Every structure is written in structure tokens, then in C-alpha cells.
Image (tube, rainbow, N blue to C red; front, side):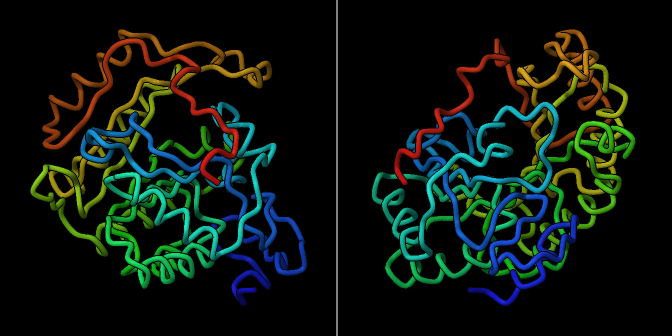
Length: 299
């Protein structure tokens, strides 16, 4: 039991429910840790996945629940297996033993206190690879401050510049304000990118932005904001893997794949304004085969 869950304000939803008493807030989770999958993942950025893979732990539930979420079965349907803090610490060590370059915590926000306790245990028992915090970017700064000293690599999304899109597709009216402040704290904690002897990122920030159909101008504003404020202090990963799901009947304007010319225009724009450290995606990435099989394997 963690006192922070008595009136939960871990994320900007600030639900203030007592998750220790099994009350549910927006994320749909109580105090119990629920994990949908744990295993080596090879489809992250090259400096995260490398040749051996990233030791990825997919947590169930989500504080954002985007209309276009590709992981709907775990983010909204909350599929997964309940694990203890001790078991989570062992999962981290098992992934390290499998050769993972890092431990990659996916959608971890609503379990931050439990994750910290698990990391303490696993580090006492030999965990020594970098820890990646892989989130939607929609974070409370105070929660990110709790992670200072535990996280080596921050991997946040930056989904929207204009909050009208965040309101429409993710039901939050203050996405930009919280994401921009959280990003500032993340960079303050881990500093500029640092690499190990094998060229793998050992410390730093990678900001992901996925182009959504029809939102090219909003995407340009995000890239401009990141370049103007941080440029070579971070990596910027510009993604085209948006994949329409079965839940988009209410949003026909985004119920399609990204136009190839729009993505190329966004990449050209990023280069033109002077992006220093960046990643782009090539080829056919709008396939469900890029979505992991959530079957509680490794849990």
C-alpha cells in the first residue's frame, strides 16, 4: 500500500480516488500492478533496441486513452495479469538475464510508486542496465520528480500542440501545458544524451511524435517547438506508423493511414528548421503486425 494512492494525483487527471480501497480513476487501475506483456522488443529506436532488444514491460491501463490507441486491449480494456512488487522486480532481472539493453517501462504513470519500489529491490539484486520511462507525455511534474535517480532515459510522446485536438481525441484539455512542463523536468534530470561503448543510449531524452491524419500543421508546430527549445539536447523521433483501429467510426477524418506526402513534408520541414538529432520511419509501418501480442507472456 502506498500513501500516494489514497487520493491519487499521479497524473494530470487528478482523480483523487483511493486506489488502495480499489476505487477506480480515469486510468482504470487500483493499487494492483497489472502487466500485459514482458519481453525483448526490437522495434524501438535503434539506440534503444540495438541488436539484443529492449526489455519491455507493458503495463495495463492508461491515463490518456486516445481514440486511435493501437494498444486498446490493454489501455482501455485493461487486459493483463496482476503481479506483486516482488514479481515485477524479478521480471526486470529476468529481462536483464535475457540480454536486454535496458528495461523499458511502457505506460507506467499510474504505477510509479510501485515501480520505484520494484526498482529498489531489483537494483539491490543486481539490476544494472538503464531504465527507460516510455509514456504518453501527459504527466504531472511532481510525479516525474519522484523518478529522479531511478530513470536513465525518458521516452515521452508529444502528441498535440493545439489542445483542441487533445480534447477531441484524448479527452484532455491541458495536454500541451503538462507535457511541455514534464519534458522540461525530464531533461533537467538526465541531461544531454550519453552513449555507452556500443553506441546504445545510456542517458538522455527521446521525444516521439506520431503524425496523425489531417494534423500536419499541428505536427509542424510541435517539431518547431522542440527544435527551438531543445534541439541537440534531445533526440526527436518522427513516426508515421499511425494505424486505424476498429474504434474510429466516430472520427472518420482520422480513420485512415497517414498520407505519405504529408509525412515526407514533415520530415523536410524538420530538416529545414535545423533538427540535429532525429529519427524517421521508412517503409510500410501502418500494419497491425507492429503491435505486440498482448498475451501476458513473460509475466
